[in-house]
Length: 173
Image (tube, rainbow, N blue to C red):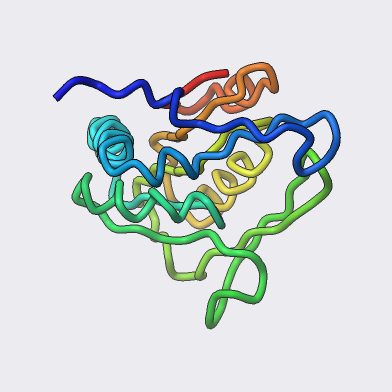
C-alpha cells in the first residue's frame, strides 16, 4: 500500500480559536481509515523503538490516538486529565498555554519508580503542556523516553524547548 500524504489530511481553520490563529484540524485525518491506520502505525513504530512501559496521552486530543498507539506498541496507556476528572488521589501540574493557563492531573499511582514513558499529544506548539507533563512524570519517579505528536508547529519553538527528549512528529509546519 502506498504511503498517504498525511499533511494533505489536515484542515486549516483560519481565525480559530481567535483572530490570527490558523488552527490545524486533525478531523479529516481521523475520518480517513487508511490515514488513521498509517498515523497510528508510524507513531507506534517510533514508540516501540523508545522501549517504553507506558504511553501517556494528554487531554483531550492526545487521547484520540494515544490509547491506540499504546495498544499497537504493546504497552499500557495512562491519561493526563483536567482537574477533577480522575479519581481518587492525583498529582497535578499547571502550565501556560498560548491563550492562557491550564492544569493536568495524573493518578498518584499511575507511574512507579523507573517507569519508562512516551508522552503523546496531537500538536506540539510552544511545548508548555508537554514540558509540564514531563515534569510530573519525573516527579513521580518515571523516565520520559520520548515525545510524539501528529503535528509539530515548528515556528513556535516547542521542539527546541523540549530538546532534552527524543521527539517524533508525523507532520511539520
